[in-house]
Length: 293
Ligand SMILES: C[S@@+](CC[C@H](N)C(=O)[O-])C[C@H]1O[C@@H](n2cnc3c(N)ncnc32)[C@H](O)[C@@H]1O
Image (cartoon, rainbow, N blue to C red; front, side):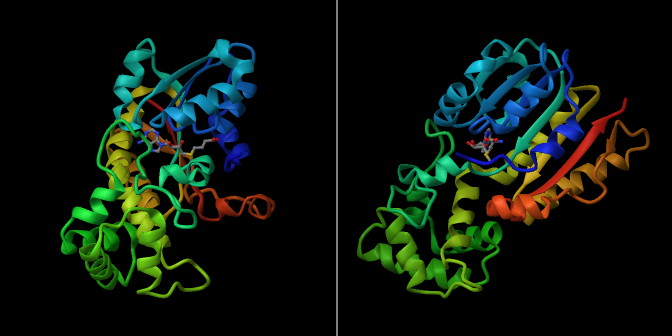
């Protein structure tokens, strides 16, 4: 089961109340949604959305006891205006996005997120649309591949890796995650015990799901759907995402008549105990803003 990150901090910043209306736009297995529902008994309402219908099914099971106070919806959070429209048109008192992938997705080899088990080269959160990792790996020109690995993976050996992928696929298309991982580990060495394919897999996943553009589009709009006093929380897992959140929140704060107040001058991070219990939390950064006008 996915362990939700910085649960107490999410509740401290959001401060849910029993007449509030909340949006968990990356519901996953429902860990954060559950905490918001528990903190807002008896009347708080939570819209639980996720791009991945498999995750929503799991969340429905996990949150069955609260179902009278939840509306589930499959949606990309970048389309927040559609989420609002579909769920009655009202604004929220709290919105959270907890970015990236869920443990259940990476553990399910069929999804193709993991380099440590063999699965199809897919990597899409929403399997009903978009291009797959297979197309990126087997069809993109070497320069384009190299650019993706460099920009979204921050991988210094991007040229070598792109060249090796193109050479390998000339012999036969790369069919699965294990083949891709093996081409990469046959070409470069990982540093500090990190698997050499880590950054390339991250890069392809970010590209396939358009993760950074989703985040930018969402951040520009999300505050419009907060009530005054409402809080927006973003939990990110790598510097590319955190930079976007930090810069966007700073721009908001610089407006002549600010509409938002930054609640986290520095990003909140997990404490030592959380890191002991959940190593995945080590790169998590939480930033929050409050609507003040
Ligand atoms: C880190 S998990 C969320 C975990 C969740 N907070 C919990 O407690 O179980 C991230 C989730 O975001 C979803 N996701 C990723 N990109 C998305 C997007 N653009 N729109 C909606 N959901 C997205 C993934 O499918 C995944 O379920």
